[in-house]
Length: 187
Image (cartoon, rainbow, N blue to C red; front, side):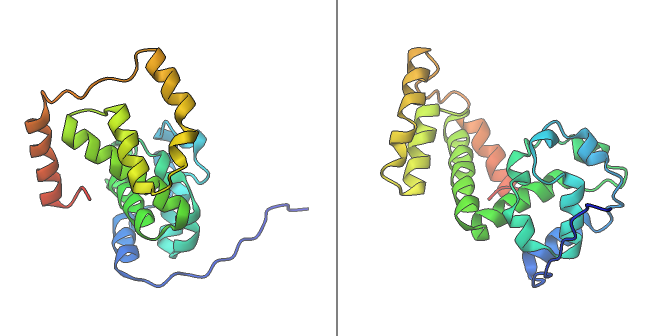
């Protein structure tokens, strides 16, 4: 007996964001090279190959429920090895931006951390853990959230893993972020 669960979906409205994503992966031939190349695929709930097919079918709700794009480390392995030359890492970044806007509580929470991390790197040249978490807590607007991270913060402090901000590379990174904004790659 075939135990494969039949799944149904209702195609989402083809708004601008979904149309942009479809354009990015439209030529995907489902070879699976992206999934085989991804170092984080083992931790994803939906493989990158499946994600591209869901985009082609307009399964926006299922896509936003997934955590796959949050596990993308932007290593560009999928993009470099794609036989069609698709910009798959850019598609993952677009999914992160879309989920931060429309993805419900989980998407907005992950988006808050993502935005806080990028702001932190732009301001200080590298991730400044204490300031990163401070920015994340402010974005989350949950006064009890810092308490859940107190143990981790104390352990990091005890091991010397929390550092004061260094501004040595600040001008270089600001130029990089400005150029990324100019070409539409950063939000």
